[in-house]
Image 1 (tube, rainbow, N blue to C red):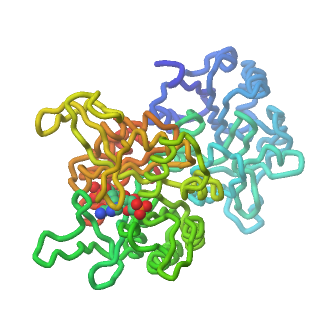
Image 2 (image 1 turned 45 degrees about the vertical axis):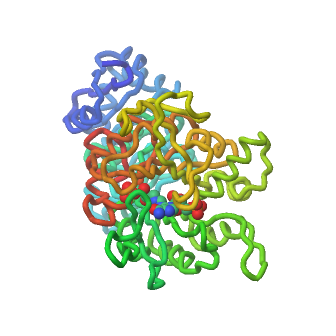
Length: 523
Ligand code: 1PR
């Protein structure tokens, strides 16, 4: 195994550290056992699961010279994780076996819980932490509980407060973890604390581990012919039923569905007002209401798009796109998404080479920050025989076109796919990144609603060409389509609509599948 997947374990033989060994192997790490003090000094990362009692443990550490090596290792700010007694031994002393000196790294004396305070000792069971900032390895813990079993504890004081990364309450406030630089220690047992505990270990072992991949549920919203705001879903952007009445397909109510997807584990929710290009969004108060109601119960990022542009209404009153965005943000949106107007802005920018600062994209990005601005691209695949046939970025496609064409470019459209524009998805993506977009929502009209998988050729092209996150969209039909897009492209997120609305695949199954494939997701 490479040093990247090797962890050094200090097991001085006083007890059973089998669970921690199993947990480390489960996380894909090989274990190197410390035989001599030099192994400590040479470790890339060291885990010290203290077991047994304080005095005998110190005795072994002192006699073998490992105590001295540990002190040096920690003083040099080398990656260290102490567990349980492995935290307590760092303190000046402990009262566990009469007053015994510890490693003396952290000021304070470890003492026994006071059972006269009406609590049972030992403290055995699951408890929540008060996590401070910069705890780093505890970032996933939040309000979830972790497992403790101990009778002794260290208490927060003025001398050790700089070390404390979390405290816990059990009759009194005690130190549940410490952190300084690369040195961490926890009083609880991460190897017995389920998924939360594994994530603590994972974060220690691989602090550079990439952020989790994101699964987004998307709700295309519009008013149906009866005037109700409904969630609809198209086939290649056609949202009308193939029946005589040709009514707008109705898949549910926006607020209800968003609430359901939040409960099911969606990491983000997007609302696209798909007729916003023709109706002025501030005229469309229902969408504002949808955001208000949704944000009361849904606590993941909400994106809203559709019709964001400067607008003059029938009475001649002018609304800037900034006003529209401001109203959306006030109503609970975290990000706004711009489609058609970003295409015009990109065309303009490419033609003139000048950033006017006047486009909706530039203005909203300047005022609210680029993290608040998504550009939604609606491209359609156009096959060509020769890469030189068009002045746009052409790629060799995995699946040839109907006449055996080996190449394609991706033409941007506006007005919900109704009008093709003289710009490709690649050129658009590069331009909007320059103009201040913080994220790209990459649809594909050919794949939309087909359930045959994402267009990985397109997603790869765009996610390799820009530095901002790219959301793959259109075509998800199975959990495997999600792992495929994450494995073969640099997408940061994958979005789906139809399979969630039609309840074909729950969000939970998508995430479980991704985890099985070793792709990190929030559970
Ligand atoms: O141009 O700024 O007014 O924004 C309009 C927005 O509405 C754009 O983001 C555009 O993508 C979207 N939109 C316009 N018309 C439609 C339509 O379907 N007729 N929907 C439309 C876009 C694509 C995705 C869909 C995925 C996944 N729909 O939102 O959710 O393709 O679907 P799937 O998982 O079922 O395959 P502007």
